[in-house]
Image (cartoon, rainbow, N blue to C red):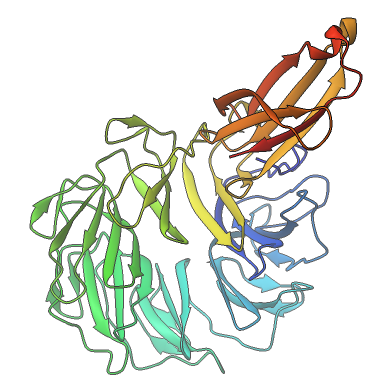
Amino acid sequence: SILQDSLNPAGPVRAVGLAEDGGVGFVGGFFSLLDPILRAGIAAIRVGDGAILPFDAQLQLSVSNSRPSVNSLTLHEGVLYAGGLFEVAGSSPRTNLVALALDTGTALDWNAEANGEVQTVFAHGTNLFVSGQFTSLGGASRTNAGSVSLEDGTASTWAPHPNTTIESFSAGTNGVLYLGGSFTSIAGQARGRLAAFSLETGAILPWDPFASGPIDVVLASGDVIFAGGTFVSIGGELRTNLAALTPEIGNATEWSASILGRVRVIEPVGDQLLIGGDFTRVGEVIRNRVALLTLTNGAVQPWSPLVSGSVHGIGAAGDEVVAVGDFTSVSSAVHLGMAAFRPEGYAVLSASRGPNQAVNVEVFANNGEAIALQGSTNFVDWVTIQSNRVVNGVIRYTDNAPNNGTTKRFYRTIR
């Protein structure tokens, strides 16, 4: 983890979105202060060092001593859309939905009001899909869910009326919008917490995997739909909290990764799947609230940070990964609700002279990575000094070779 420990949100962090190059991370939640600079509900950070950027949406609630909150963020074509509980952004009235400039946080002219708290926002095509606890959206009557135009904020005709909040949206390449939550009825049809709609017509489709418990996240990835939450059966098969489903019918595929605990977030990273939540084990392998799985067969990868509490959001872009949630430490280092992880293969090596000319070497890298430390006296001939897997983010070694007459010593790491 590489964010500065001084980054101190006074409240839960619930959402994260990364700019395309991964250099800037936008975080949202129920915080009123992000040390050392005042921010309310939303802030922008430089991922490399955790510095707070000038971006400032100045979200406010009119109720005295009440804090605004941001539950969901989505970036689309150079605009940041935020949903939560607030009434003002800067000097502009904005009720629970806002479009913000990425550099300054200034509220744009786009305006689509929701008369209750917004839980989830998802931008796709020409629409912003929205869920929450509201009865009107974008100037139209909408119960708990709807979509608005990304051009002017007016409501579209899509009105699914779920009987409770939708937690997640995802769009497939097949022209289908997949969504999940706790609902059992949507668009006048019985559905077991998962549903699919045509993006072209807005009509509900027969797809119905019927999960036995709440769905927190849905992800359309190629020809598979991943679903995470708290369940023991889905798609006609026994699956624990994470499953892969067929996009046409909703049957569970052979892909399986039994998760001990709630899965709140799924994020694709290349040919792998990054998951986060409340879990402490994946299959027979201990994993603390985050894990990396292969897309092909669900095999658990060595990457294994030790996160002290729930992970509610993960953002990935380029080589950067940022996690947010209710944790206070990552791999024994203090991180209050936010942490950025080094890309795979990244290692920082430092060496210092100790007593009796011995050299103390430290290698900081991702937990679980196999790292070989090598030494040389001429930059040509390299000898492996130690090979080990990273534990708690660091490998330490004391090299006594300089005690034996070696005047120069160079070090490097390889994977």
